Image 1 (cartoon, helix red, strand yellow):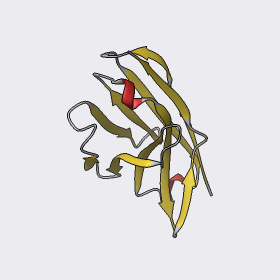
Image 2 (cartoon, helix red, strand yellow):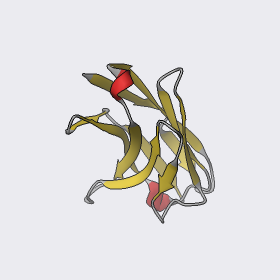
Image 3 (spheres, one colour):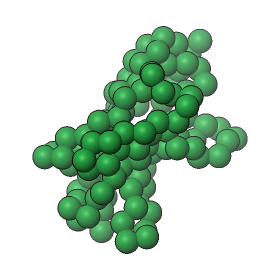
Image 4 (cartoon, rainbow, N blue to C red):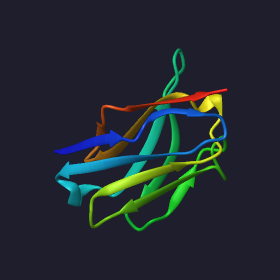
Length: 115
């Protein structure tokens, strides 16, 4: 069993930055990758970025060049650095992982970007 807790969301003006954190506890040795997803009001949850334990990142096209995913394996904590934020980035952001075919989600953190 793995527990994921996000933090770092908030209200920011367009063009600003935020750094989200995802702290894992429990059976963290089972984590092979962490992904960040987001869900805006009235829209489906979408994948934002993924990073493996070895540090290989991948990004959705809409955030590439603006967001950076990273991780501190020693602390079992992963980050999403978000720069040049746009109003369309407004959403609840979730970190998630898949262990033995079971999806684990955090509770989410709200990011609101004002124009």
